[in-house]
Image 1 (cartoon, one colour):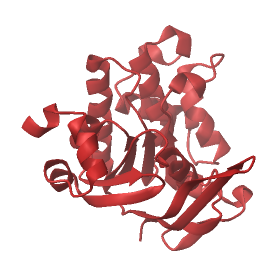
Image 2 (cartoon, one colour):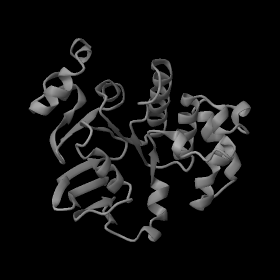
Image 3 (cartoon, one colour):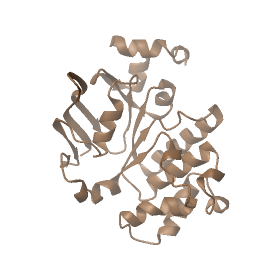
Image 4 (cartoon, one colour):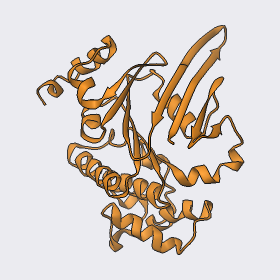
Length: 253
């Protein structure tokens, strides 16, 4: 049982030109696993992520969760899926309502998904799990740092205790200190709760820190898969080698 993409194909037409964003992609995220999806901009990572989140439909192929077809399907019938698969955005500033308090932002998906229990208490617990205490509950996003807003986004995603977290470049906009703090939060949460992670990134140092397995995308295809250690130290595909050459410090690490 797992979150599974099978044979996903997606093409976009612009005038007379057709671009293939995904070309028969297969990807599996088993329960409790930590999988990285890496590749350059335009490789198809974002398109694949949106399909795994049941936000877009493919031209062919499917996404299933524990054997139940999610994509293609009816978005209105996916409340159960939203409870189990949550998303951490790249830029929380675009997804956090500036008019709402931190505790309300985290409680909102609990209300929308019909979670049982005291939503405010569950939100406070999620915020505490990412290191934000009572001092932050009534603040607005504009009163927080970039790292604190990213913690709020993580708390919002984990408040309903999902089985899978899908993170899109979760630390790309942060300085080194804040980046390390957020990666530590994700690492601790996944370890403590056995929540599976899919981390979409072009940053191989993030992958080395968080993920045990890796899939490399290029031109809409997954060109290499394996353990993070084996792929980063002995890459087979030329595209993977090119990505590594751009981050020479990983060789010595």
